[in-house]
Image (cartoon, one colour):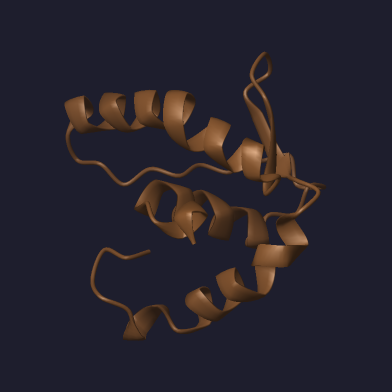
Length: 96
């Protein structure tokens, strides 16, 4: 559940559910009107969220190429992510 405790991690994981690796377009997770907030989120993603999700095995993160792909344990969390996505309108505002 810690993997889903932060909105940035939830958004990244849900984006990976829908991402087709054969598409050449990168997955972008951004929702900031303020440049300062965007920088803070980028720093947190780099130093907190990506390492944590990588450690859990939900993603594989290549720090050199800045690529994130589904990890070996992604299938374990995918049904919960799909459930959250399917019921997004029932969740509190800003949860996803």
